[in-house]
Image (cartoon, rainbow, N blue to C red):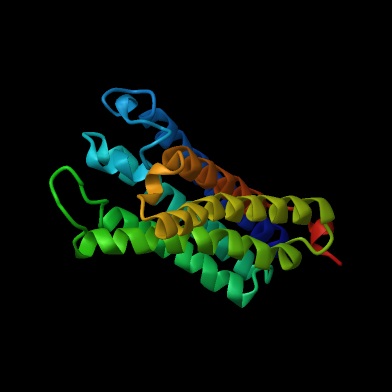
Length: 218
């Protein structure tokens, strides 16, 4: 009786975590269709641009929901011994990175000529978070789904696709460094970042969604 109850609690927490991810993503999508943030280009402007608008609180809430949902779901995996230590560390970097993004907003380049301390932290946290999450999913997939090859394969494919999006950004940086241009003008940065964020959230959702007791066993 106690075991069944604990299992149900874990499943409920995991589902709540996934729901928080969905809610956070939905809020960001909402910002793309309501004024005045509907005027922000989804192809050229990054998601953090919403944090400079009148709807900053909506953006902050969305990111916090994703961070809390991630922490809750990863904690369940850890308790179930389905989260290797390296993946737990990477997952923590993802979660903390999201909170730093909220605490230190993106600088408004219309009013500042260079990034301040907070802006630098924002950039670093963004890169760390976006890289740490897919790596965490890759590392955790085998342990999380020992008897579910389909879920394991899907998680890995989504994680690799997420890193692929990031590789596009790195490629632009390298080309700009060689040609002396501005890397963010070489690609549709907003579209690439949104594609990466969506792919990573789906990958995380696949990892966090509860599985049946039978699927846990070797």
